[in-house]
Length: 235
Length: 287
Ligand SMILES: Nc1ncnc2c1ncn2[C@@H]1O[C@H](COP(=O)(O)OP(=O)(O)O)[C@@H](O)[C@H]1O
Ligand SMILES: [Mg+2]
Image (cartoon, rainbow over all chains, first blue to last red; front, side):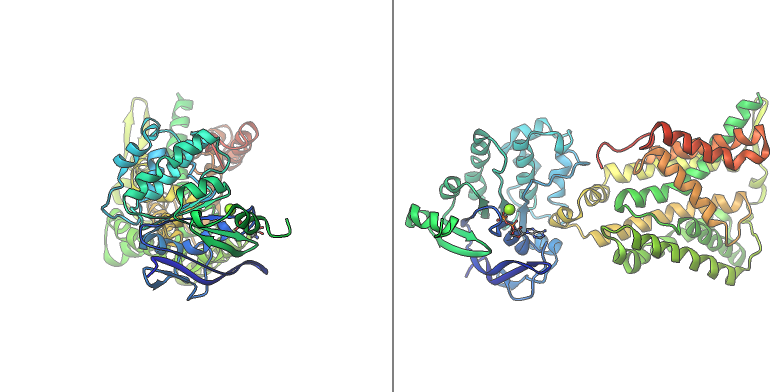
């Protein structure tokens, strides 16, 4: 049984339909990548799972329980933590306070504590008392990932963690993923960088215009297939 | 010597204005809500203390200690049941609703207590004073000022040293991301308004023991509170305390020059500070 799955998921912004019957699933311990061009609906999918966009009941299941109509704060308490697009640090909080917000509600004993997050990203320990938003983009992304880890989540959703960062910084951040995986977390990474997604993921979903156009293990997917699914066959 | 006395009295008066303002500042800082019924809630709390004093024969301080949790509960319920529903990107609905609440409170108090002005009896404390060289300072004004500092310190501690305070600041920054951290903004806001109502009760204690009040006293208190919050810089608690003191000093200095100028001098000080520092004395770094 899948740890997390969506079935026929739809999402709307007012009258505008952003998702059209999306089916994705994530198994225990798995890392799945969601790729797709700008506006494909990746962020909308993350928001729908995390409860920021309320769903009709029946479209999202987590640990076998229906969570489509559950509030965002209760979904996080159940164990789905989000690294939101744009990092979204709290500007009036220091680095350490930002991290502590991650376990404000869900306090679960597990591998992730302030200390182990500082071991994963040592630079954050040096800057723990600075305002979170005073850090460089890459360091802010580390805070955002660390903050999500602080709740020892069962599922970690990462929305475009490489967006706007230099390649060496992206490499640094993805270097942390093996350690995160090793703690048993199941991970969804949203990426526009196909190469990066293929490297980190066990399975890939490609989205276009609110639909899943392709899915499979990186090794089983050809460049042409991915190209078509990403840009559309007309391209 | 007379000027030193005037300024000292003004500083102490500023403590009272700061107490009026701190609850307003707290709520505004967290949820960008301007509560137009704030002054009326202070007057309401003053009547509540008065009732406890006259009905149960309690001292005013014990009565305020009993009124505080009642006011907390009322504030919590008010936020939960009414104000949370109108909070949003549009600032007009909360203004309308709290204006309505202000009118409602005034009318209800008028019904219940008539338009006569009242005072909370504080016994010998009312006239007690401590000599300070040639100057003498009233014990009640001194206690008011000390309370304003204690309340500022306590709120400062709550904001910056507790996990509730951290959630207050995070929710104020970004309620959606805060909810991704497991915060329920509706309940955080309700706690904040409840705490503001405890501050309101403390303000009511000193308002009611130091001067007469009647059901229509609220709006004028709201204006002083409002001015103190804005002078101080929105969302800054120490700024609010400083703002209250500036208005208090301006008023006593104005009154010393010409007794008719007391209120006007406070408003002029407000305008002057705003002209020089449009964002107040201690604005937050971001907004
Ligand atoms: N808040 C919003 N209001 C209206 N439309 C939106 C909003 N957010 C996203 N959209 C639209 O929904 C579609 C999917 O957007 P999004 O999920 O952000 O895509 P992606 O993350 O893949 O770039 C786009 O067409 C976008 O314009
Ligand atoms: Mg996106």
